[in-house]
Length: 336
Ligand code: SF4
Image 1: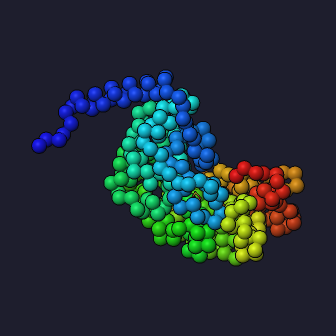
Image 2: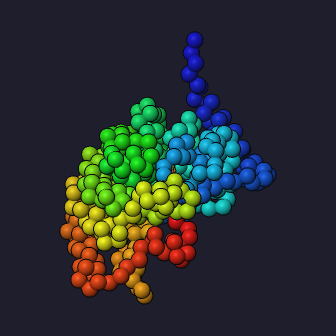
Image 3: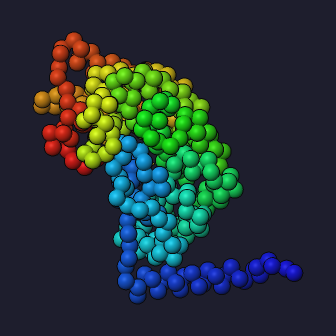
């Protein structure tokens, strides 16, 4: 028996799909539901939510989805959202898919293909992904999502140190992280890893710096994004902090940690960004340090020199600085 579709079948499907899109755009009530979090560089992206919450939801520092039960949204609902997003965002040049771990959605390749159909102008479609989920998915699935038009995965490494990862309850070890990065690259994705400066606390900042760089050296990411651990009220890490079971890395130590991290990196064709407010250091009346950014390996020296200048100012001139943790606790910043 021949189960192959006839050439015209796909055309009929296309016509049905177009009629469906027209109907949803003009006659159906909007149920659009957007992801509450996205990376800083996706600030102007059209947002599509294919899952709600986080299937892991145990990281000690994270407050993002703590009160949300995880679910994969039904395919039909997601498609309606995509059409509504087109009405809201127009011809967006970038699309971001939320929430925290969308490779768990079994229909992701079909969803991405639909997004590409509704947003034909989009130059980039990206999503968050957990390392363990990348490892659990068959290569065929990853490649299908990539071929459908998913370009980039944002993965939370946080740390490459095994003890720090365990303390953070990240649910993945250094080898998992490196392997997930390699697999994602093998499937054809661009990979962006997030590193949590200060995650080692004052007792493990050196190990955190060196081992995080080592994992990234093995994974070979396209982007590394730094954000600084800012302990938020109500998180398990906040409770550990109050019990004295975790000590924050002081701003000066954290600068040294970042310098050691950059010095240990041996990645190529990679861009390092500090595109988050939490990386800043403030004096009484100005900003002393805005983080570092640049291409690796070419701008490694320039970036380490920027950090050294900040270290020297603090050490030699005794300048007092505040970081995002102090500002958060003083009530001067709330949204992270
Ligand atoms: S950091 Fe990411 S993986 Fe961890 S609980 Fe938060 S959303 Fe989930």
